[in-house]
Length: 186
Image 1 (spheres, helix red, strand yellow):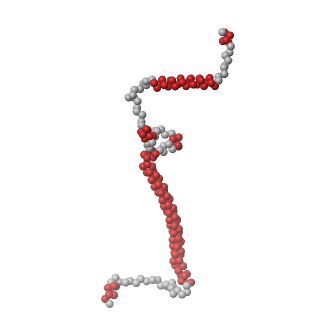
Image 2 (cartoon, rainbow, N blue to C red; image 1 turned 90 degrees about the vertical axis):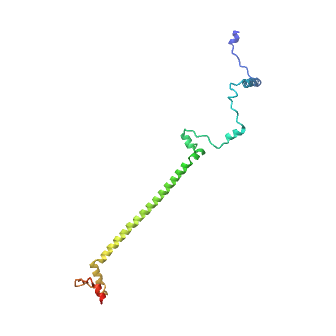
């Protein structure tokens, strides 16, 4: 026997028939174990068991339109993935979303009208400066033409004018205060 122990054991080739027989034996053992588990009394009582929902209740539960509540932890992945934009979230926040949208529209229109008004003010300021310069130049021309030396020169160059420079100083004619009553009597 010592010789038999020292000899290396040669592996015998396994045939397909032997392998399938072993698998069938294992399957039978597993089936027997599962039947034993089913036949064994359970540790829970009938009162602990919840009745299984009927098919109609199960369909209602799966087909409901409400969504599960949002998880309280927001991650960057959920925000960028758009998971927080669920129908329930939008339904709860529709008022604030509309309010913010309204404020944005008012802000944009107000800014546009202010820019339009600023452009109008700038254009009117440019027109005002232009009008001031024209008025100043017109005033200076009028002052130049009304100067006595210029008036005298124009009178001398224009031969059909009968106006001449007075050689006597002007004198004051005094009218009495009761002149209107004197004229009425006559």
